[in-house]
Amino acid sequence: MDIKILQPDVTYAKALSELGARIFADTFGVDNPEEDLEAFLATTYTTEIQTQELTNANMFTFMAFNAEDHPVAFCQLRISEKIYDFIGSTPEESIELQRIYVDKNCAGQGIGKQLLEQAIAKAQALGKKTIWLGVWEFNPKAIKFYEKYGFQKVGTHTFKIGDKLDTDEIMVKQLS
Image 1: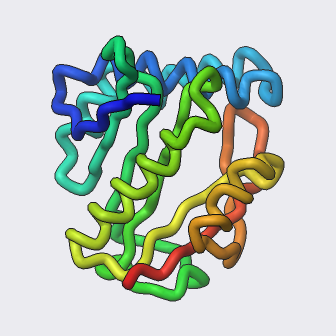
Image 2 (image 1 turned 90 degrees about the horizontal axis):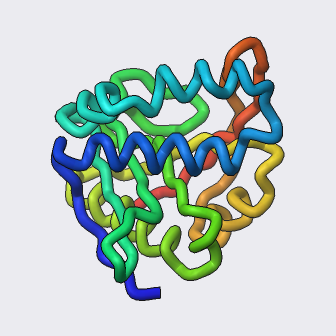
């Protein structure tokens, strides 16, 4: 698939919020009560929140667009002041791959790989030694994808959507 990847500015906040909400709902909607899902989306994927994230100096977003210039995927990196001890790195040396989502109609076409490569290149350009992420324990395709690119499971954390608590596998990749 012919795609273009760019680092969006705030003019893309609405498109990013709509894309994020749609992909998250498509991916996790069947596993969460509707009211919990709607509440989560309303606190995560609004234009206002994406505007804040796009202007946050500690966040880096990449969006992928198809040949018709429609957004089909995105990823977001985040520098955090606090990280889990089991990541094996300091906050100054690490960066979180907070989100990487690909439209279900574009899955398996290499877009996730291209976004991951962009994220890793950005992390290296920032001088980071470790990139880490959380992935839902019941998402074996995603876990296998990350393992294919050198991520290893190092621990777990809890991810809350409404009243439902899920377990995410924490995965880490050392950067050279």
